Length: 282
Image (cartoon, rainbow, N blue to C red; front, side, top):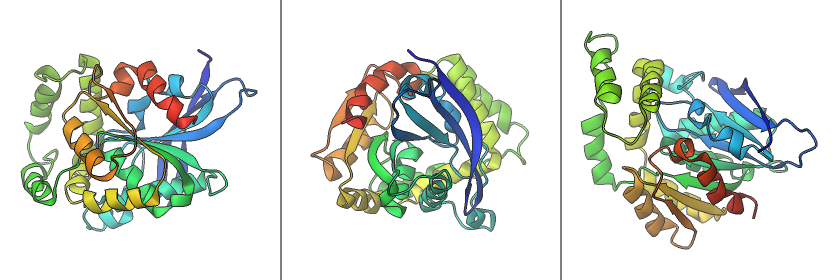
């Protein structure tokens, strides 16, 4: 494996600045393939791809932007002014950032969207289809409208960081000490820190997911006929993700890496790279 450069920087968008974690081969003579943009889940940041970067950036430039409102990125102005967070705002802000970084119809990118990032990838592509060459979707939170409404009522509640003194320690116990997921203790702690960094604004994630018309978004993306790959890990969104594939993309490839947990790109970065590179390089 060749060495890669890893650095942090900012790009401009309609909502202020977007923080970006990037990597590329250290050897400047290495031929470069189409750049890859990795879009994270909420309420995390582009840092979740740190283990994946050295593997996938062997022969391409890779950017991992923080979704507007998360990590080091500015929150969408409409949300600051009181409008409900939505995936469309995220997609528009990320598209702006890519244009600011120099991407265009003549210099397009590929997308890797995970969980909330998969919906962000859909809206980014809808907003600026000429920017996007190929799309990899992982863990789409696809639920019919009536289920989204029920989940919004169940899960979209204020994050009580500023009102409940037991909120943070209870969250730490739930997410780290008493968690029963497949993540390591270090990964659980990282997820906790991501939630802490987002603070009360972390609610933008579920706000945007459960109010998003996934049927409209998936149908619109399918109509664009972009080369698309579905990738599935062994996790809670596997079945909703596969259901979205059956309904809207039955003729595109679906690769299942069932030996990998939710954040498969952290647990098995080489396995994920081996699975997606034939598609990206095709």
